[in-house]
Length: 271
Image 1 (cartoon, rainbow, N blue to C red):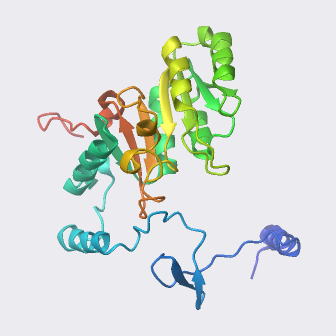
Image 2 (image 1 turned 90 degrees about the horizontal axis):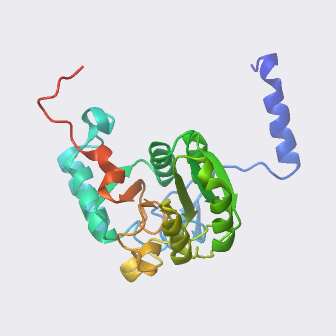
C-alpha cells in the first residue's frame, strides 16, 4: 500500500503517461548485433552504439571467457584498495599504445572519466573554457571542480580566444575542454584551431573523444590522431561503450595527468 506522502509519485507518473512522455525499459534477449530479440520480437537494431559490431565479435567473446576463467567475475574491491588486476594494467598499456599517448587510466564509464579528470586539474582559483554544446558529463565534471566555467560559442575558436583574453588573467590557470564529435549533431570540433588558442595562452587542453574513437583517425584512434595532435593535447577522454562495444571509460594523455595509477611503494606505512 502506498503511503500518503508518496501519492505524488503515482500522480506524476500518470501525468507523464497521459502526455506520452513515460518511457519504459525494453528488455533485450540476445547479443546486441544488427538484429536482436527485444521483448520477444526480432528487430533491426538502429539504436545502440555498437558502431563496429564488436559487442558480439567471436574474438572478444573468447577473450572475455578466458578472463572469467582466470580472474573470476570481478575484483571485489575498488582499484585503490585491492581491485587493480593485471587485466587493468594490460588494458591501460594497450590503450596508451593505441592512442599513442604516454599513459592511460581506465575507469567505470566515460561519464565517470570526465567527472574524475576535471577536479584534479582545476579548482576554485581556476577557469574552464567549455564549448556551449559539451556533453552533460563534462558539465558535471566542471561543476565538481568548483572552477569558474566560461562558455564559448559552439566550435568557435575566435569566440574562445575572445573569452580567454577577457577572463584568463583573473584566474590561477585555465583549461579548454570540448567534445571531439558532438553526439547530438555529429559535427567535429576544430581541434587544431582550439589547440592553437590554448597554446598561445598557456592553457591546458582536454577533449572527450567518446564518439570519435573508432570513427576518426588512423585505425579509429580518434580526433587527436585525425588532426595530428599527438603529444600536444594534455587529456583525452574515451569510452568503451560506443565503438568498442563493451563498457567502461578511459583517461589518456600525458603521464603527469594520469599519475594516480602509480603504485604506492610497498615500504610505505598502511592504515
